[in-house]
Length: 596
Image 1 (cartoon, rainbow, N blue to C red):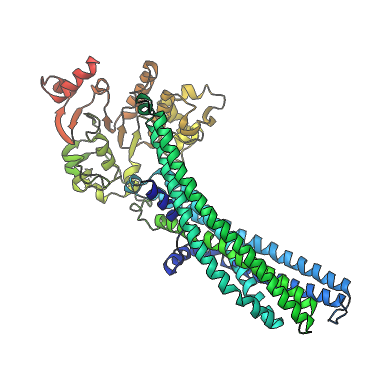
Image 2: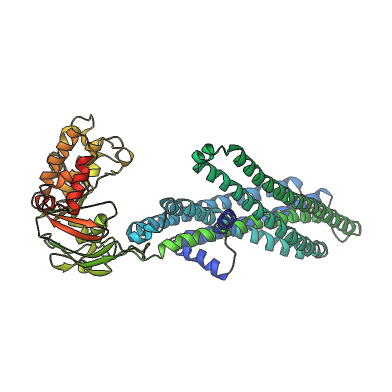
């Protein structure tokens, strides 16, 4: 398990560079197209900056030659020194515009990606969220996009700069000092082959170290999750020894990897400096024979330093691009998901609120083997108040989710005002359904913003009127900031009863034809319950209302109760009718609750 987890982590971070993976990264380039002019001008400044800097070693060499008495275009060392400073100044100006233009492109294109991602996320169906964790989705819109931002603002620019430096540097050296350049290039294949062999061993051992560390971490995770069991069986010493053995394996593999790494570094140092000595020796012989000037040798050494830095930088850039490809895959995966049907504006049609479920059977897509609803038939005339009662898991919330079209109806039909729910515009349907949940989660803004969420264009008078009807204005007016009072994250600064009344005010402002109450008073004290119940009575007037019942004492006044058991309606009737059935399921539920 641990090894699999470690391997998955590494695979998640990096992707191999091939045609398919690069096309994934290319899929992100469409967000850069609106800013292509800035991008290409930035590339031009990048090219000019790199080429300008490459003239520095050549002029520096001529400074040495001029000091040695050799003639050049400019024979004054002070003038040549000024030329070097001018080269650096011009290169700095080019670099500034390159960085600024790439930043403009990356910041704006990443903003567009984040907007596209977020817009797509909130439009995706519930089945998508059932299969993924919230933390994973937040990571895609933050960490993955940040990785792409680094790639487009820094990594790509560095990649092009290093390639230009490498190619242009070698071409320049081939033109100016062909013999010494060929001698230097002859040492490259040997170094590269040996580096690849060492690198393969080091990567393998590094991965093995990660796997062993993941296995050791699993021991910690298991122990802390089951700490009561560990202590009750006096297993502290056993677990400590188990963890010690796991860490010893990590150390052994890590030391083996360190041995290879040390040998590799030692070889590189020896080979690199040995190569420098060989090149310097050969260069010195060319200087001694008159085939090369001292200034050309200095220029050659400086160019070699530039080229060596480019080769070293390309390795890191390669790793960054691999990670960027992984991030682009995860971002594109969401962008390519199919959203819910269009929630575009619609023609307003008056909704009466008659609801019918006809032979409805349903399985959640994530649990196809479990039939949650079994042949559900119910009718709720417009304006009636009905309750859904039954044990937890009986299917009450599923009926509400199908009514809201969170999931498609697989078998049977759900109709509103005689029209199949499949034919209703999604925005029109949900605009006519209001919900007051049991656990109210408010947004972190002001009370006004939370109430107006149901109708953003609402006037101040409408918001105050809704708050008054919900019995919320009395506590809101006591706050120093009134409607502008911040409720805190998830409404934490308000009490349970206050949150419920804000949610009721929001539902009143929405003015829906169909109202769903998820037992909104079940977790309140007596005083708050009375105020909330009074607000709910106001809200339920002239609306089709479905109450998900947890406490049966609160649903005595409804027109009809549907009793569910394991996804089936086993009883229906009023509270009085159902309690009179001596061996009835509902009557038994009532007896159990009042016996507590």
